Image 1: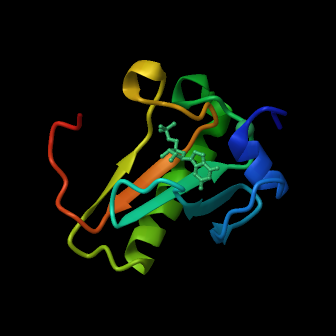
Image 2: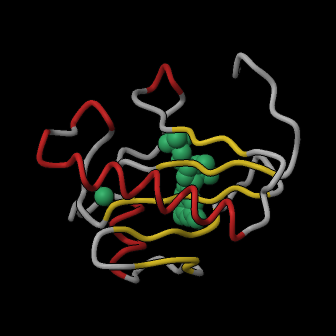
Length: 114
Ligand code: 5GP
Ligand code: ZN
């Protein structure tokens, strides 16, 4: 846990978030500032700064983030498609330095992303 980390505070219950999913390893909740009709964040309970900080020991956890994100996309009814995004670093648009998977859907996505 990092004292200044917004997502660690959500995990601790110090910042409210309506959880869509939780288990011993990960939790999921709606993004506070959605950029698509469905915008869910899936985060590990473990404070990992971002994908560049992942180690071999985190492989199962990383797979779980993708699995939970994909399951939530199905449960939310995103049958026409969805996008999973993980930003790393300021240039990529990362603003919260606790690893998180964005699940985006409910509208047509363009490529390349901005
Ligand atoms: P990033 O830009 O780091 O990839 O994504 C961080 C995301 O966290 C942003 O989409 C932002 O809207 C979201 N976010 C930041 N603070 C909070 C918060 O307190 N609660 C929730 N639910 N989402 C947050
Ligand atoms: Zn954190």
